[in-house]
Image (tube, rainbow, N blue to C red; front, side, top):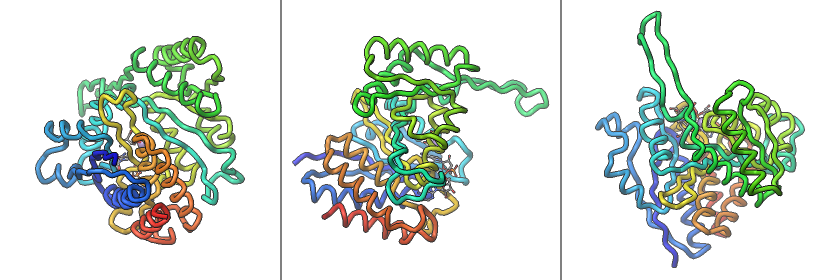
Length: 353
Ligand code: NAD
Ligand code: IPM
Ligand code: MN
């Protein structure tokens, strides 16, 4: 029997609540599809930091690096200054494990209420490929005269030909497996250096190696408009780290809410593990109430199963989540039609068959 070793990081707030549901669903998928996992749960996040000052010790990093995949809930809590956990844990993992593709599907599933009037599932099925190791996220910049009236702060976006090209190539290849259409999203009319690198790379790689894929370009501000008015325009979308962060929250809203939006931080070379997590954060406003929608975590598990070459199990998990969504009366909060735990049970029961 195939066995995979998974590292589990529930994290903060609703992170452990929704991750527990994904693990129940995983138990059911293992039974039904005849594979097994070993799992190590890591106590990382706000509680550990506040108790010990530790965010992500090197010894833990080394262990995580041995996993076949990492499942993460969410990190960040109001008790810890912003950035300590987000940068020290989440971004550190993405960067250190060179997970340069952040794959974020935006798909409206049947029966899910969307805030976009009249939008139907056939018009909303795209995949956003977010660059995940460069851009504004590298933490380059500085501050002069800190805390004075003369303060000056800079924050730089790092873009390398290597980094831009590899994520663009990944996106072109994905487009070939879908509807052969790739949109570059940037802001070339203002960001003259980075935008030029992205556009040239996009055109050169497309012309040379993916001539069958239709290319489109959209400025990021217009992207926010089109995602709402004409999402059918998009198949695969490639963009930089910060633009990708922003437009995928918008995508989450379009597909029914953050409680449904899944993601995979992929290292396509396999040199280090890939990591799967909901797009949403720790949702401190609803933590502990049983009001978190577990579907984003379950769909992230489905992406992990696909990554581990269990396409059948991945599909069964996705279908089960989609089925339960049609029975839900809200996509989060007290009126969902069941607690986080009950919804997890329902999805797991369907997967079990
Ligand atoms: P958030 O995603 O935690 O919450 C935004 C809104 O969405 C809140 O109203 C929340 O209640 C709701 N929401 C989120 N997940 C939900 C779910 N599963 N079901 C129903 N409703 C849900 O974003 P935020 O409030 O900006 O950030 C809170 C903390 O999370 C911060 O510390 C932030 O840095 C961190 N964060 C972490 C990640 C991550 O770990 N990947 C992602 C985003 C934010
Ligand atoms: C996300 C989050 C993270 C990001 C934060 C928590 C660092 O918003 O995964 O979308 O900005 O990438
Ligand atoms: Mn985000």
